[in-house]
Figure: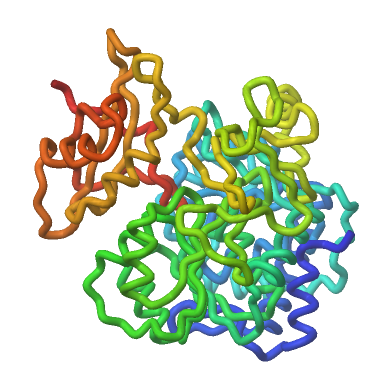
Length: 495
C-alpha cells in the first residue's frame, strides 16, 4: 500500500511550479514543499527516528506543519498531531501515552510543550521558520518514501476526551488514502485550479484530511490561516480568489454576522462538518454569500468522512447526506439490531476508513467496534430517499420526566428567532423530573431579546415537555480547538 505522502510526491512531479501553500505573502510551490518534506525526513532519520516511531507535531496552521507532517510520513514514522494550546500536563500525557520519540513545537508557544516533553523525557525541538529552514538545508533530501503495509498506522490522532482522558485513534495509510481519494474525486471534486481556505486547524482530522490532504492530492492551492478570524477569512477569499471554504458551524455563524462586504464571488463550494449546522444559519449564509453549503458527517475514528451531501445529487438542508463510496452505515438500537425505517438509532459505520482501534486500549476498541461496525455515539434517522439526519449525540439526549428530548431540535427552533446568533441546549439535574431542559443563548450584534421572550418563542412551537424552562444569555459559548461547541463546559447560572 502506498504511503499517504506519495500524494505529495506525485503532485510535485506532475506540477512542480504550481503554488501548494500560501501564508500571507509567502507562496510555496509543490516542488519546494516536496523537497522540504524530504529534507525533514532526512532530519528525522538523523535524529534516530525509525519506521513505526511516533513523532508529535504541535504547530498552528503554518507551512512548517505541512512540511513536518509529510516528512514524518516519508520517514515511515507516525504523525501525532497535537493542539498547540495544550498545557504541560496534557502534553506530557499525550507524549507518554503515544510513546512519542520527538516533539516539534512552534517557537512562539509559551513553553508548555517544552515542559511537557521534559517531564516525559522526550526530545523537544522548537520550530522557528528561519532557523528551521537552515536546519533542513543541512540535510540532503531523503530520496525514498517509506513503503508501509496496508494496515500500518500513519497518524495517531487523539480524540477530544469528552468521556475521560483522550484516546489515540490509529488511522492507517489505507484508510486516510481512501478518504482523501473519495473526497477529492467524488465529494469536493477538487482540481488543480481550486484555491482552498485553510482555517480549520490542521492538527484536527477535518482540516488535516478534507482540507490539507485533499488539496495536495488534487494539486490545488491551500491558503493557510493560523487562527480563525472572520475578516481574515473574507480577505483571504478575495485576495486569493478562493473557490472552496470548509468550516464548522460556529465559523459559518461568525461569517454570517460579520459586517464585511468582501468579494467572495469566486467561491463555488462551502463544506460544513464537525457538528450539526443549524438550518437557519445555512440558509442565511447561502443568501448572503451566494454559495451552496454542503454538509457532511465524520469522526476522528473514521478518517474522517462517512456521509456527505454529494454535489451531483439533491442537497437536503439539515441532512448529513448519504454514505460516501465504499462506506456502509446502519442505524442500531441498544441491542445492536437495525431499527425500523424512519425510527431513530445509533449511527454505525463500516468501511476502509474506520480506524484499526484505540492505541493500546483493546477493551475500549472492542466496545466501540464490537462486531466490525463502529458505533459513532450519534443518534440519527433516515428518510425515504436514504438521506441521514443527525438527531443528537447519544450522550446529549435529555430525559425529562421519562420523555426523550433531543437538544438539536430545540436549538433549531431557537435559531429561528431573529435575535439569536448561537444556542446550546443542555440538560440540568432536577429532583423531580431527573433532568430539566436549559438553554444558553448568544444574541446577534445589537439585537435584543429577553430569556422570557425566547422561552415563550420555543414554547409556542414545540410540545409542552420540550421547551427550555431555563434560558440565559451569554456573550460567547465555549468551543473546542476545531470550533465545536463544548456542551460539557456549559453550566446553568445559580437560581
